[in-house]
Image (cartoon, rainbow, N blue to C red; front, side, top):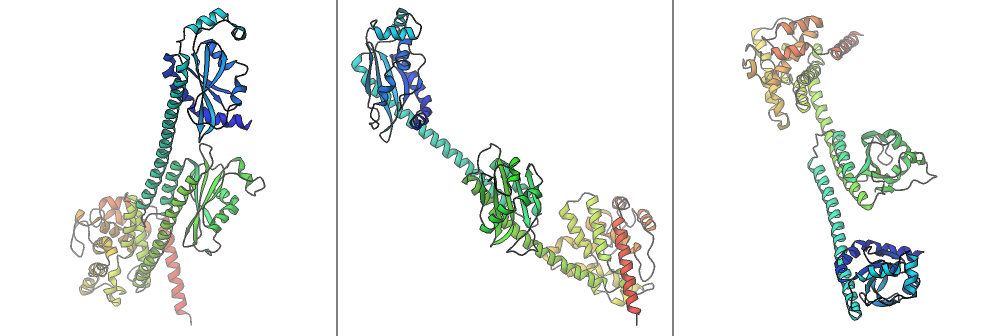
Length: 556
Protein backbone atom coordinates (compact mmCIF):
# COMPACT_ATOMS: atom_id res chain seq x y z
CA UNK A 1 0.00 0.00 0.00
CA UNK A 2 2.81 2.41 0.88
CA UNK A 3 4.59 1.60 -2.38
CA UNK A 4 1.49 2.47 -4.41
CA UNK A 5 1.09 5.78 -2.58
CA UNK A 6 4.73 6.66 -3.09
CA UNK A 7 4.58 5.87 -6.78
CA UNK A 8 1.48 7.96 -7.26
CA UNK A 9 2.89 10.86 -5.27
CA UNK A 10 6.04 10.93 -7.37
CA UNK A 11 4.58 10.23 -10.81
CA UNK A 12 1.29 12.08 -10.61
CA UNK A 13 2.83 15.55 -10.70
CA UNK A 14 4.32 14.69 -14.15
CA UNK A 15 0.88 14.25 -15.77
CA UNK A 16 1.16 17.59 -17.55
CA UNK A 17 4.62 16.61 -18.81
CA UNK A 18 3.29 13.28 -20.17
CA UNK A 19 0.49 15.11 -21.96
CA UNK A 20 2.99 17.45 -23.62
CA UNK A 21 5.18 14.52 -24.66
CA UNK A 22 2.20 12.61 -26.04
CA UNK A 23 1.16 15.64 -28.09
CA UNK A 24 4.60 15.80 -29.69
CA UNK A 25 4.97 12.09 -30.47
CA UNK A 26 1.42 11.30 -31.52
CA UNK A 27 2.00 12.21 -35.21
CA UNK A 28 4.95 9.78 -35.33
CA UNK A 29 2.80 6.86 -34.22
CA UNK A 30 4.08 6.70 -30.63
CA UNK A 31 1.54 6.60 -27.81
CA UNK A 32 2.43 7.16 -24.18
CA UNK A 33 1.26 5.94 -20.80
CA UNK A 34 2.60 6.17 -17.25
CA UNK A 35 2.84 3.35 -14.70
CA UNK A 36 3.66 3.40 -11.03
CA UNK A 37 6.46 1.34 -9.58
CA UNK A 38 3.88 -1.27 -8.56
CA UNK A 39 2.52 -1.62 -12.11
CA UNK A 40 -0.58 0.51 -11.59
CA UNK A 41 -1.64 2.60 -14.57
CA UNK A 42 -1.49 6.29 -13.63
CA UNK A 43 -2.13 7.96 -16.97
CA UNK A 44 -2.44 7.10 -20.65
CA UNK A 45 -2.99 8.90 -23.94
CA UNK A 46 -6.74 8.57 -24.62
CA UNK A 47 -6.20 9.03 -28.35
CA UNK A 48 -4.40 5.71 -28.88
CA UNK A 49 -6.24 3.06 -30.92
CA UNK A 50 -8.40 0.66 -28.89
CA UNK A 51 -6.09 -2.27 -29.61
CA UNK A 52 -3.09 -0.41 -28.16
CA UNK A 53 -5.18 0.93 -25.29
CA UNK A 54 -6.33 -2.58 -24.37
CA UNK A 55 -2.72 -3.72 -24.48
CA UNK A 56 -1.98 -1.10 -21.80
CA UNK A 57 -5.12 -1.35 -19.69
CA UNK A 58 -6.17 -4.96 -20.11
CA UNK A 59 -3.12 -7.11 -20.73
CA UNK A 60 -3.29 -9.63 -17.88
CA UNK A 61 0.43 -10.02 -17.17
CA UNK A 62 1.60 -6.43 -17.70
CA UNK A 63 1.42 -5.24 -14.06
CA UNK A 64 3.20 -8.37 -12.86
CA UNK A 65 5.96 -7.90 -15.45
CA UNK A 66 6.46 -4.29 -14.31
CA UNK A 67 6.68 -5.27 -10.64
CA UNK A 68 9.47 -7.71 -11.46
CA UNK A 69 11.66 -5.05 -13.07
CA UNK A 70 14.75 -3.80 -11.18
CA UNK A 71 14.39 -1.08 -8.55
CA UNK A 72 17.57 0.70 -9.60
CA UNK A 73 18.27 1.77 -13.17
CA UNK A 74 19.94 4.57 -15.06
CA UNK A 75 17.47 7.20 -16.35
CA UNK A 76 16.31 6.87 -19.98
CA UNK A 77 17.39 3.20 -20.22
CA UNK A 78 14.44 1.53 -22.09
CA UNK A 79 13.24 -1.99 -21.34
CA UNK A 80 11.10 -3.88 -23.86
CA UNK A 81 8.15 -5.94 -22.69
CA UNK A 82 6.59 -8.54 -25.01
CA UNK A 83 2.87 -8.29 -25.61
CA UNK A 84 1.66 -9.81 -28.88
CA UNK A 85 2.56 -9.69 -32.53
CA UNK A 86 2.49 -6.25 -34.12
CA UNK A 87 2.50 -4.20 -30.87
CA UNK A 88 5.59 -3.33 -28.91
CA UNK A 89 5.83 -1.62 -25.53
CA UNK A 90 9.01 -0.06 -24.15
CA UNK A 91 9.33 1.16 -20.60
CA UNK A 92 11.65 4.02 -19.72
CA UNK A 93 12.35 4.40 -15.99
CA UNK A 94 11.50 7.62 -14.14
CA UNK A 95 14.52 7.51 -11.87
CA UNK A 96 15.42 9.79 -9.00
CA UNK A 97 19.02 9.23 -7.96
CA UNK A 98 18.88 5.95 -9.92
CA UNK A 99 15.92 4.81 -7.77
CA UNK A 100 12.98 3.89 -10.02
CA UNK A 101 9.89 5.90 -9.07
CA UNK A 102 7.72 4.98 -12.04
CA UNK A 103 7.70 4.14 -15.75
CA UNK A 104 6.96 5.86 -19.03
CA UNK A 105 5.40 3.41 -21.48
CA UNK A 106 5.94 3.95 -25.22
CA UNK A 107 3.52 1.85 -27.34
CA UNK A 108 3.58 1.58 -31.12
CA UNK A 109 2.35 -0.61 -33.98
CA UNK A 110 5.42 -2.22 -35.51
CA UNK A 111 4.07 -4.59 -38.20
CA UNK A 112 0.90 -6.12 -39.56
CA UNK A 113 -1.33 -7.40 -36.80
CA UNK A 114 -2.56 -10.94 -37.41
CA UNK A 115 -5.74 -12.24 -35.72
CA UNK A 116 -4.73 -14.47 -32.87
CA UNK A 117 -6.09 -15.72 -29.61
CA UNK A 118 -4.90 -12.77 -27.51
CA UNK A 119 -6.39 -10.24 -29.88
CA UNK A 120 -9.73 -12.10 -29.93
CA UNK A 121 -9.73 -12.07 -26.13
CA UNK A 122 -9.03 -8.33 -26.02
CA UNK A 123 -11.73 -7.64 -28.61
CA UNK A 124 -14.22 -9.69 -26.64
CA UNK A 125 -13.38 -7.83 -23.44
CA UNK A 126 -13.88 -4.49 -25.24
CA UNK A 127 -17.10 -5.75 -26.90
CA UNK A 128 -15.60 -4.88 -30.26
CA UNK A 129 -15.45 -6.71 -33.52
CA UNK A 130 -11.93 -7.99 -34.21
CA UNK A 131 -11.91 -6.65 -37.74
CA UNK A 132 -13.12 -3.24 -36.61
CA UNK A 133 -10.45 -3.12 -33.94
CA UNK A 134 -7.75 -4.14 -36.40
CA UNK A 135 -8.97 -1.60 -38.93
CA UNK A 136 -8.81 1.17 -36.30
CA UNK A 137 -5.27 0.11 -35.32
CA UNK A 138 -4.20 0.07 -38.96
CA UNK A 139 -4.84 3.83 -39.13
CA UNK A 140 -1.97 4.40 -36.69
CA UNK A 141 1.45 5.05 -38.31
CA UNK A 142 3.70 2.05 -38.55
CA UNK A 143 7.03 2.28 -36.68
CA UNK A 144 10.04 0.16 -37.56
CA UNK A 145 10.83 -2.15 -34.67
CA UNK A 146 14.58 -1.42 -34.46
CA UNK A 147 13.90 2.31 -34.35
CA UNK A 148 11.43 2.11 -31.50
CA UNK A 149 14.07 1.48 -28.87
CA UNK A 150 16.05 4.54 -29.97
CA UNK A 151 12.89 6.64 -30.05
CA UNK A 152 11.98 5.42 -26.55
CA UNK A 153 15.35 6.65 -25.33
CA UNK A 154 14.68 10.06 -26.89
CA UNK A 155 11.24 10.17 -25.23
CA UNK A 156 12.86 9.46 -21.88
CA UNK A 157 15.42 12.19 -22.39
CA UNK A 158 12.72 14.66 -23.37
CA UNK A 159 10.79 13.72 -20.26
CA UNK A 160 13.84 14.40 -18.12
CA UNK A 161 14.30 17.80 -19.76
CA UNK A 162 10.65 18.76 -19.41
CA UNK A 163 10.47 17.45 -15.87
CA UNK A 164 13.63 19.30 -14.93
CA UNK A 165 12.27 22.47 -16.47
CA UNK A 166 9.06 21.97 -14.53
CA UNK A 167 11.02 21.53 -11.31
CA UNK A 168 12.96 24.71 -12.03
CA UNK A 169 9.68 26.51 -12.72
CA UNK A 170 8.24 25.24 -9.44
CA UNK A 171 11.35 26.30 -7.58
CA UNK A 172 11.25 29.71 -9.22
CA UNK A 173 7.58 30.04 -8.33
CA UNK A 174 8.36 29.03 -4.76
CA UNK A 175 11.25 31.49 -4.53
CA UNK A 176 9.08 34.21 -6.07
CA UNK A 177 6.35 33.52 -3.53
CA UNK A 178 8.85 33.61 -0.69
CA UNK A 179 10.39 36.83 -1.99
CA UNK A 180 6.93 38.33 -2.26
CA UNK A 181 6.25 37.39 1.36
CA UNK A 182 9.61 38.77 2.48
CA UNK A 183 8.99 41.97 0.52
CA UNK A 184 5.60 42.42 2.19
CA UNK A 185 7.18 41.79 5.58
CA UNK A 186 10.01 44.26 4.95
CA UNK A 187 7.54 46.81 3.61
CA UNK A 188 5.40 46.42 6.73
CA UNK A 189 8.39 46.74 9.06
CA UNK A 190 9.57 49.81 7.14
CA UNK A 191 6.08 51.29 7.31
CA UNK A 192 5.95 50.65 11.05
CA UNK A 193 9.38 52.17 11.63
CA UNK A 194 8.80 55.21 9.45
CA UNK A 195 5.34 55.73 10.97
CA UNK A 196 6.59 55.88 14.54
CA UNK A 197 5.92 59.25 16.10
CA UNK A 198 6.42 59.71 19.80
CA UNK A 199 3.40 61.98 19.97
CA UNK A 200 1.18 59.36 18.30
CA UNK A 201 -1.36 57.69 20.51
CA UNK A 202 -0.28 54.07 21.20
CA UNK A 203 -3.76 52.72 20.47
CA UNK A 204 -3.92 54.38 17.04
CA UNK A 205 -0.44 53.07 16.20
CA UNK A 206 -1.23 49.51 17.29
CA UNK A 207 -4.58 49.59 15.48
CA UNK A 208 -2.86 50.36 12.18
CA UNK A 209 -0.13 47.75 12.78
CA UNK A 210 -2.65 45.01 13.62
CA UNK A 211 -4.70 45.83 10.53
CA UNK A 212 -1.60 45.48 8.32
CA UNK A 213 -0.49 42.25 10.04
CA UNK A 214 -3.94 40.71 9.67
CA UNK A 215 -3.97 41.46 5.96
CA UNK A 216 -0.43 40.25 5.21
CA UNK A 217 -0.66 37.16 7.40
CA UNK A 218 -4.24 36.33 6.28
CA UNK A 219 -5.24 35.99 9.95
CA UNK A 220 -8.83 35.96 11.13
CA UNK A 221 -8.09 38.31 14.02
CA UNK A 222 -5.19 40.08 15.72
CA UNK A 223 -5.37 41.46 19.27
CA UNK A 224 -3.04 43.37 21.59
CA UNK A 225 -3.38 43.54 25.36
CA UNK A 226 -1.01 45.85 27.24
CA UNK A 227 0.53 45.36 30.67
CA UNK A 228 -0.42 47.82 33.36
CA UNK A 229 2.42 50.27 33.80
CA UNK A 230 2.20 50.37 37.59
CA UNK A 231 2.52 46.60 37.97
CA UNK A 232 5.58 44.66 39.06
CA UNK A 233 7.62 43.95 35.91
CA UNK A 234 8.37 40.43 37.17
CA UNK A 235 4.69 39.54 37.40
CA UNK A 236 2.84 41.85 35.02
CA UNK A 237 -0.92 42.00 34.80
CA UNK A 238 -2.51 42.43 31.39
CA UNK A 239 -5.16 45.12 31.17
CA UNK A 240 -8.13 45.24 28.83
CA UNK A 241 -7.58 44.52 25.15
CA UNK A 242 -6.21 47.77 23.71
CA UNK A 243 -6.68 46.80 20.06
CA UNK A 244 -8.74 44.16 18.24
CA UNK A 245 -8.84 43.74 14.47
CA UNK A 246 -11.05 41.04 12.97
CA UNK A 247 -13.56 38.74 14.63
CA UNK A 248 -12.74 36.51 17.59
CA UNK A 249 -16.05 34.79 18.26
CA UNK A 250 -15.79 35.88 21.92
CA UNK A 251 -15.12 39.26 23.58
CA UNK A 252 -11.42 40.14 23.53
CA UNK A 253 -11.08 40.46 27.31
CA UNK A 254 -12.68 37.04 27.80
CA UNK A 255 -10.30 35.53 25.25
CA UNK A 256 -7.23 36.97 27.00
CA UNK A 257 -8.50 35.80 30.36
CA UNK A 258 -9.19 32.25 29.09
CA UNK A 259 -5.77 32.05 27.41
CA UNK A 260 -3.93 33.36 30.47
CA UNK A 261 -1.85 30.18 30.86
CA UNK A 262 -0.35 30.06 27.33
CA UNK A 263 0.00 33.85 27.33
CA UNK A 264 2.00 33.89 30.54
CA UNK A 265 4.09 30.98 29.28
CA UNK A 266 4.98 33.05 26.20
CA UNK A 267 5.79 36.02 28.47
CA UNK A 268 7.92 33.82 30.72
CA UNK A 269 9.91 32.43 27.79
CA UNK A 270 10.07 35.77 26.02
CA UNK A 271 9.38 34.35 22.57
CA UNK A 272 6.37 33.53 20.36
CA UNK A 273 4.44 30.37 21.19
CA UNK A 274 2.51 28.58 18.42
CA UNK A 275 -0.57 26.49 19.25
CA UNK A 276 -1.75 24.75 16.09
CA UNK A 277 -3.71 22.22 18.16
CA UNK A 278 -5.67 22.84 21.34
CA UNK A 279 -5.23 19.86 23.70
CA UNK A 280 -8.47 18.31 24.90
CA UNK A 281 -7.47 18.61 28.53
CA UNK A 282 -6.27 22.20 28.32
CA UNK A 283 -8.09 24.75 30.46
CA UNK A 284 -8.63 26.87 27.35
CA UNK A 285 -10.24 23.99 25.43
CA UNK A 286 -13.58 25.76 25.89
CA UNK A 287 -12.48 28.07 23.06
CA UNK A 288 -12.17 25.20 20.59
CA UNK A 289 -15.58 25.99 19.14
CA UNK A 290 -14.48 29.46 18.03
CA UNK A 291 -10.66 29.32 17.92
CA UNK A 292 -8.78 26.43 16.33
CA UNK A 293 -5.24 27.83 16.35
CA UNK A 294 -3.46 30.81 17.84
CA UNK A 295 -0.03 32.37 18.36
CA UNK A 296 1.02 34.29 21.49
CA UNK A 297 3.72 36.88 20.83
CA UNK A 298 5.16 38.78 23.82
CA UNK A 299 5.79 42.51 23.57
CA UNK A 300 8.96 42.93 25.61
CA UNK A 301 11.81 45.39 25.94
CA UNK A 302 14.92 44.73 28.02
CA UNK A 303 13.17 41.76 29.69
CA UNK A 304 10.30 44.03 30.72
CA UNK A 305 6.83 42.97 29.66
CA UNK A 306 4.86 45.60 27.77
CA UNK A 307 2.00 43.39 26.58
CA UNK A 308 1.09 40.52 24.27
CA UNK A 309 -0.06 40.18 20.66
CA UNK A 310 -2.40 37.34 19.67
CA UNK A 311 -3.01 36.08 16.14
CA UNK A 312 -6.06 33.81 15.72
CA UNK A 313 -6.62 31.27 12.92
CA UNK A 314 -5.70 31.71 9.28
CA UNK A 315 -8.49 32.40 6.84
CA UNK A 316 -7.40 29.49 4.63
CA UNK A 317 -7.67 27.10 7.62
CA UNK A 318 -3.96 26.23 7.36
CA UNK A 319 -1.61 25.93 10.33
CA UNK A 320 0.68 28.68 11.54
CA UNK A 321 4.18 28.25 10.12
CA UNK A 322 7.63 29.54 10.96
CA UNK A 323 7.04 32.28 8.36
CA UNK A 324 4.01 33.51 10.33
CA UNK A 325 5.93 33.32 13.59
CA UNK A 326 8.84 35.27 12.15
CA UNK A 327 6.51 37.96 10.81
CA UNK A 328 4.71 38.31 14.15
CA UNK A 329 7.99 38.26 16.09
CA UNK A 330 9.51 41.04 13.97
CA UNK A 331 6.36 43.14 14.19
CA UNK A 332 6.20 42.61 17.96
CA UNK A 333 9.81 43.77 18.25
CA UNK A 334 8.99 47.00 16.41
CA UNK A 335 5.87 47.51 18.49
CA UNK A 336 7.86 46.99 21.69
CA UNK A 337 10.32 49.69 20.64
CA UNK A 338 7.43 52.05 19.94
CA UNK A 339 5.68 51.22 23.22
CA UNK A 340 8.85 51.82 25.25
CA UNK A 341 9.46 55.11 23.48
CA UNK A 342 5.80 56.05 23.91
CA UNK A 343 6.06 55.34 27.64
CA UNK A 344 9.21 57.42 27.91
CA UNK A 345 7.56 60.19 25.92
CA UNK A 346 4.49 60.04 28.18
CA UNK A 347 6.73 60.24 31.25
CA UNK A 348 8.44 63.27 29.73
CA UNK A 349 5.07 64.83 28.93
CA UNK A 350 3.84 64.17 32.45
CA UNK A 351 6.96 65.82 33.86
CA UNK A 352 6.58 68.72 31.44
CA UNK A 353 2.91 69.24 32.26
CA UNK A 354 3.66 68.88 35.97
CA UNK A 355 6.18 71.70 35.76
CA UNK A 356 3.74 73.88 33.80
CA UNK A 357 0.93 73.26 36.28
CA UNK A 358 3.28 74.03 39.17
CA UNK A 359 4.23 77.27 37.44
CA UNK A 360 0.62 78.32 36.87
CA UNK A 361 -0.29 77.41 40.45
CA UNK A 362 2.52 79.61 41.68
CA UNK A 363 1.02 82.49 39.66
CA UNK A 364 -2.52 81.83 40.85
CA UNK A 365 -1.27 81.52 44.42
CA UNK A 366 -0.51 85.25 44.42
CA UNK A 367 -4.25 85.88 44.59
CA UNK A 368 -6.62 83.44 46.29
CA UNK A 369 -9.46 84.72 44.10
CA UNK A 370 -7.73 83.70 40.88
CA UNK A 371 -6.83 80.16 41.89
CA UNK A 372 -7.75 77.75 39.12
CA UNK A 373 -8.14 80.61 36.62
CA UNK A 374 -5.34 79.45 34.30
CA UNK A 375 -6.60 75.86 34.26
CA UNK A 376 -10.17 76.93 33.51
CA UNK A 377 -9.07 79.28 30.74
CA UNK A 378 -6.95 76.51 29.22
CA UNK A 379 -9.85 74.07 29.20
CA UNK A 380 -12.33 76.62 27.83
CA UNK A 381 -9.85 77.59 25.11
CA UNK A 382 -9.31 73.99 24.08
CA UNK A 383 -13.07 73.34 23.99
CA UNK A 384 -13.62 76.39 21.78
CA UNK A 385 -10.75 75.34 19.48
CA UNK A 386 -12.29 71.87 19.14
CA UNK A 387 -15.72 73.33 18.46
CA UNK A 388 -14.46 75.42 15.53
CA UNK A 389 -12.80 72.34 14.04
CA UNK A 390 -9.09 72.84 14.67
CA UNK A 391 -6.90 69.68 14.49
CA UNK A 392 -6.53 67.86 17.80
CA UNK A 393 -2.81 68.56 17.99
CA UNK A 394 -3.42 72.28 17.52
CA UNK A 395 -6.18 72.18 20.16
CA UNK A 396 -3.64 70.83 22.64
CA UNK A 397 -1.28 73.70 21.82
CA UNK A 398 -4.14 76.13 22.44
CA UNK A 399 -4.64 74.42 25.81
CA UNK A 400 -0.97 74.96 26.73
CA UNK A 401 -1.12 78.58 25.66
CA UNK A 402 -4.23 79.08 27.79
CA UNK A 403 -2.50 77.44 30.72
CA UNK A 404 0.44 79.83 30.45
CA UNK A 405 -1.39 82.95 29.24
CA UNK A 406 -0.77 84.80 32.54
CA UNK A 407 2.78 83.58 33.18
CA UNK A 408 3.98 87.16 32.70
CA UNK A 409 2.24 88.18 35.94
CA UNK A 410 5.31 86.83 37.68
CA UNK A 411 6.84 90.19 36.76
CA UNK A 412 3.91 92.23 38.11
CA UNK A 413 4.04 93.36 41.77
CA UNK A 414 1.75 91.32 43.99
CA UNK A 415 0.31 94.50 45.49
CA UNK A 416 -0.99 95.48 42.08
CA UNK A 417 -2.43 92.04 41.36
CA UNK A 418 -4.30 91.84 44.66
CA UNK A 419 -5.36 95.50 44.95
CA UNK A 420 -9.08 95.53 45.82
CA UNK A 421 -9.90 98.95 44.42
CA UNK A 422 -9.48 100.73 41.11
CA UNK A 423 -5.98 100.68 39.65
CA UNK A 424 -4.09 103.86 38.98
CA UNK A 425 -2.85 104.58 35.48
CA UNK A 426 0.66 103.54 36.50
CA UNK A 427 -0.62 100.32 38.04
CA UNK A 428 -2.66 99.54 34.95
CA UNK A 429 0.40 100.13 32.78
CA UNK A 430 2.25 97.60 34.95
CA UNK A 431 -0.56 95.09 34.41
CA UNK A 432 -0.49 95.71 30.65
CA UNK A 433 3.13 94.56 30.52
CA UNK A 434 2.38 90.96 31.56
CA UNK A 435 1.66 89.61 28.02
CA UNK A 436 5.07 90.84 26.78
CA UNK A 437 6.79 89.57 29.94
CA UNK A 438 5.17 86.18 29.44
CA UNK A 439 6.29 86.04 25.80
CA UNK A 440 9.81 86.94 26.91
CA UNK A 441 9.84 84.21 29.57
CA UNK A 442 8.76 81.56 27.03
CA UNK A 443 10.86 82.94 24.19
CA UNK A 444 13.93 80.86 25.05
CA UNK A 445 12.02 77.58 25.21
CA UNK A 446 12.13 76.10 21.71
CA UNK A 447 9.27 73.67 22.30
CA UNK A 448 6.89 76.49 23.31
CA UNK A 449 7.49 78.92 20.46
CA UNK A 450 4.16 78.13 18.77
CA UNK A 451 2.08 78.94 21.89
CA UNK A 452 3.57 82.42 22.42
CA UNK A 453 0.91 84.16 20.24
CA UNK A 454 -1.78 83.16 22.70
CA UNK A 455 0.25 84.55 25.62
CA UNK A 456 1.26 87.75 23.86
CA UNK A 457 -2.03 88.69 22.16
CA UNK A 458 -4.80 87.50 24.48
CA UNK A 459 -5.59 91.09 25.54
CA UNK A 460 -5.84 92.44 22.01
CA UNK A 461 -9.37 93.43 20.97
CA UNK A 462 -11.23 92.86 17.72
CA UNK A 463 -11.79 96.64 17.38
CA UNK A 464 -8.09 97.45 17.86
CA UNK A 465 -8.38 98.99 21.34
CA UNK A 466 -6.53 96.24 23.18
CA UNK A 467 -2.90 95.86 24.26
CA UNK A 468 0.06 95.57 23.97
CA UNK A 469 0.08 96.39 20.21
CA UNK A 470 -3.46 97.58 19.38
CA UNK A 471 -3.90 94.89 16.74
CA UNK A 472 -7.34 94.49 15.18
CA UNK A 473 -9.49 91.81 13.51
CA UNK A 474 -7.59 89.02 11.68
CA UNK A 475 -4.25 90.71 12.41
CA UNK A 476 -4.65 89.19 15.88
CA UNK A 477 -3.45 85.55 15.74
CA UNK A 478 -6.30 83.04 16.12
CA UNK A 479 -4.81 81.60 19.30
CA UNK A 480 -4.87 85.06 20.91
CA UNK A 481 -8.51 85.63 19.85
CA UNK A 482 -9.57 82.25 21.30
CA UNK A 483 -7.90 82.83 24.67
CA UNK A 484 -9.24 86.39 24.80
CA UNK A 485 -12.83 85.10 24.89
CA UNK A 486 -12.07 82.35 27.43
CA UNK A 487 -10.02 84.65 29.68
CA UNK A 488 -12.64 87.40 29.75
CA UNK A 489 -15.44 84.90 30.35
CA UNK A 490 -13.68 83.34 33.35
CA UNK A 491 -12.71 86.72 34.76
CA UNK A 492 -16.38 87.78 34.77
CA UNK A 493 -17.62 84.40 36.05
CA UNK A 494 -15.31 84.17 39.08
CA UNK A 495 -15.04 86.31 42.21
CA UNK A 496 -12.30 88.94 42.24
CA UNK A 497 -11.01 91.28 44.96
CA UNK A 498 -12.85 94.19 43.38
CA UNK A 499 -16.24 92.51 42.65
CA UNK A 500 -18.26 89.30 43.09
CA UNK A 501 -18.76 86.73 40.35
CA UNK A 502 -21.45 87.49 37.79
CA UNK A 503 -24.20 84.95 36.97
CA UNK A 504 -23.39 82.72 34.03
CA UNK A 505 -26.31 83.97 31.97
CA UNK A 506 -25.18 87.58 32.51
CA UNK A 507 -21.63 86.74 31.44
CA UNK A 508 -22.81 84.97 28.29
CA UNK A 509 -24.99 87.92 27.40
CA UNK A 510 -21.98 90.20 27.86
CA UNK A 511 -19.85 88.03 25.58
CA UNK A 512 -22.57 88.18 22.93
CA UNK A 513 -22.91 91.97 23.35
CA UNK A 514 -19.17 92.52 22.95
CA UNK A 515 -18.94 90.41 19.78
CA UNK A 516 -17.44 92.56 17.06
CA UNK A 517 -15.97 94.98 19.60
CA UNK A 518 -13.84 93.12 22.13
CA UNK A 519 -14.26 89.64 20.67
CA UNK A 520 -14.03 87.97 17.29
CA UNK A 521 -17.76 87.79 16.40
CA UNK A 522 -17.53 84.31 14.88
CA UNK A 523 -15.74 82.94 17.97
CA UNK A 524 -18.13 84.69 20.35
CA UNK A 525 -21.12 83.15 18.57
CA UNK A 526 -19.66 79.65 18.92
CA UNK A 527 -18.53 80.25 22.51
CA UNK A 528 -21.96 81.19 23.89
CA UNK A 529 -23.30 77.90 22.53
CA UNK A 530 -20.85 75.71 24.45
CA UNK A 531 -21.90 73.32 27.23
CA UNK A 532 -20.78 74.91 30.53
CA UNK A 533 -21.81 72.06 32.85
CA UNK A 534 -18.20 71.05 33.58
CA UNK A 535 -17.26 74.70 34.00
CA UNK A 536 -20.01 75.26 36.59
CA UNK A 537 -18.72 72.26 38.55
CA UNK A 538 -15.16 73.61 38.46
CA UNK A 539 -16.28 77.03 39.73
CA UNK A 540 -18.30 75.51 42.56
CA UNK A 541 -15.34 73.31 43.54
CA UNK A 542 -13.08 76.39 43.55
CA UNK A 543 -15.52 78.39 45.69
CA UNK A 544 -15.75 75.52 48.16
CA UNK A 545 -11.97 75.18 48.34
CA UNK A 546 -11.54 78.94 48.87
CA UNK A 547 -14.07 78.99 51.70
CA UNK A 548 -12.37 76.05 53.40
CA UNK A 549 -9.01 77.81 53.08
CA UNK A 550 -10.43 81.02 54.58
CA UNK A 551 -12.08 79.05 57.36
CA UNK A 552 -8.86 77.31 58.33
CA UNK A 553 -6.99 80.66 58.39
CA UNK A 554 -9.31 82.24 61.02
CA UNK A 555 -9.30 79.28 63.39
CA UNK A 556 -7.37 79.91 66.64
